[in-house]
Amino acid sequence: MKVPIRWLKDYVDFDLSLGALVNRLALAGLEVSGINHWGLPAPEGLRLGAEDAYPVWDKDKIIIGLVTKVDKHPDADRLKLPTVEYGSGRSITMVTGAPNLSVGDTGQKVILALSGSVLFDGHATPKVLKELKPGKIRGITSDGMVCSGFELGISEDHDGIIILEDDAPIGMPLADYFGDSIIEIDILPNKARCLSMIGVAREVAAMTGGKLKPFEHKPHTFGPAITGKVNVVIQDTSACHRYTASLIENIKVAPSPDFLKRRLHQAGMRPINNIVDITNYVMLEQGQPLHAFDYDVLCSRAKGKTPEIVIRFATKGEKIKTLDGLDR
Image (cartoon, rainbow, N blue to C red; front, side, top):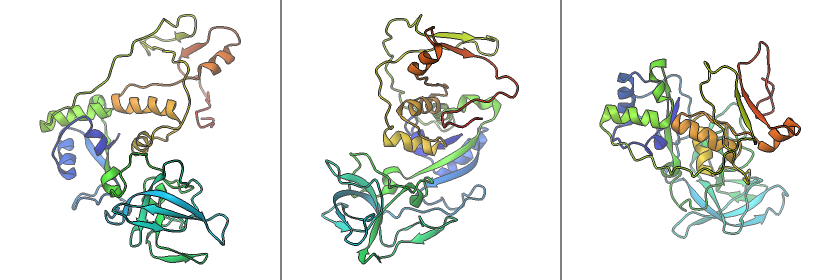
């Protein structure tokens, strides 16, 4: 299980170095088999497995900026000249081909890398770290860049740049904003209680004396019963004792908030949309598997009958089409 340290600290207070935490977890039967760093330097003497080189986000050079202006490149239709403010009255104009960069209504929050930053080269295969240096692109001097997830070493996506939340603080070092270390824990069968962020937090609290933070949630007031709108059929109750369904109406499918997408990425899951993502987020947080069905699709397949959700074992050689459209 992949456990981002920032996320873990949402549920438990502890004051241990990463190395000390790894050792305590091992003593508790939770072996850490790997560590992935988002922009933070690896602690000295703590290396697990064959960790690859990755960018360390320089706090003076990789920072949050605000796009205040975008001009066209005079000699290239696909290139733009954004002006980015990055705090204390400082700004920089550079050249970029990012298709999703714009000013918008209030300016766009982006990740700015200044000359001297060390990032993954977005044009090199295989991955290679490269120092960003001033240069001319189609006759225009560029002394910085706006960053994609690929260049920062946090995803394989380099089709567009990362757009941050509107409340991201201009001028803050990216390492302080969401730099993190993600530990990968091998969960043994007798430690199934740790198959969630809250489960790991409880374990950390027990072994360190750290204080568990209140898990704030408000019980939902349920509406009328959905009997007659959907049926749940369990074919083998010895294998599945209980399966519940709720119907949520009048929702809008949209992209998830950036913080949620980042946490899913860190936990090894691919963001899809707000509906799918929140079910995966809750599963990772609380250890409760969830799945969202499109009620309109269920109704169309039922052809006038009450839709059914059937819980059963797969048949030999059976394939299913997963959410990404592939037969598995």
